[in-house]
Figure 1 (cartoon, rainbow, N blue to C red):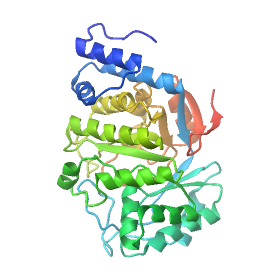
Figure 2 (cartoon, rainbow, N blue to C red):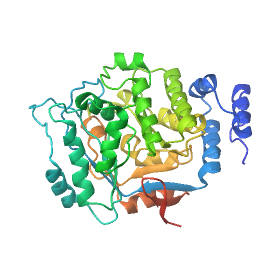
Figure 3 (cartoon, rainbow, N blue to C red):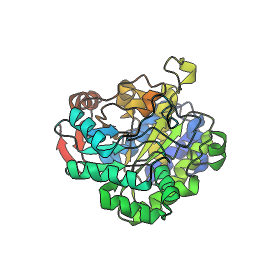
Figure 4 (cartoon, rainbow, N blue to C red):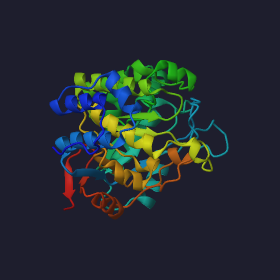
Length: 368
């Protein structure tokens, strides 16, 4: 491996460099220190080295579409601007037929995945959510259904009276193949209380993924950072994910999500800095040594910073998406999606090798 870039690395950082290079795990104190240091270049290079050992210069993306069956939600999370009450202006609940009509208007050849999330709409039964997947699966059998957050699964158990395992099995029968990573926010019950995250608690979020993994599903997981949480809260979040991955080996990717302000006109002081975003991606790569991929999510951090993040530990840039709504219902100023050509250009521009993948990181095409 190359030597550290910065000549004035302090003793604490030198110790962390030695731990990473020898394969020793970082602990809570190490992670908090990495947030406190201003040695961004050493941190970035160390994360880059860790990523290169896992993935070489390959960077992954997928042709996918984001779908939202309903924005009606019983929860009132403080950070969400997507949700609506039943009957409120702008609220909607689409049937399977209506969603198929929407997809047929926007889909293009090459789409391999539907990314499906939405509100916790308690005005429809659990069967509605089952039938929604079944309609898509029957009409587009070649497209993978990556659907619902762990918080949505927990919500389904409450409206159906079924166990987590039974809910997941019913959804699998309808075509579910993977869970999205959303609903994690910050895995701290104190945080969730303060931010009015009145949905799945920490144990429930982790248990849904644990159960999905035991049923043979590979899943995704996230962390929504940049509000009231401390750096220690973020590291504890990562450690809980790492512990579950040790247990099940079911997570394919970790996705740090940069918090968006509720207003598109919000100034820079209401947004995470590029410095904080790059740090979080790099620290995620170093802390989560048992997860193959860290995603740089261009929807939240922008295409240019996503490109830089590929030298800070990221190995995935998500996908084409097509009309993302949740971050853009808040204050996201980024594109609602990118084309395959744009993603390939972005990755090559960072000196990396673009790899089109499927949901499960099987390689479809390498763009040398």
